[in-house]
Image (tube, rainbow, N blue to C red; front, side, top):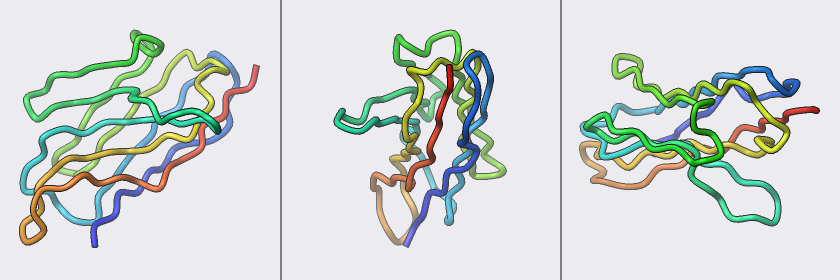
Length: 120
């Protein structure tokens, strides 16, 4: 069983910052890509930021220039730094990893989600 556990969500005023963290319960042998998604009730989950094994990043237009995805290999952790937060950023944020764990093969893994609420 592999778990991704997010932390760092919470309530913040518009213009503020939060940093989300996502740690894995087991170390990945290799990672194709990792990313952060978000979802609000009644809407589809959307990609916020992604990071490939080669270091390429991709961001949703709505967060470009405000959010930054990064990875700490030593800590087996991926981060999402969120600055200049807006009420429209309010959502449940999910961590995603497509990676290979020895003995388990390559799979998509999702965290349980962390709530981010931005007040106006």
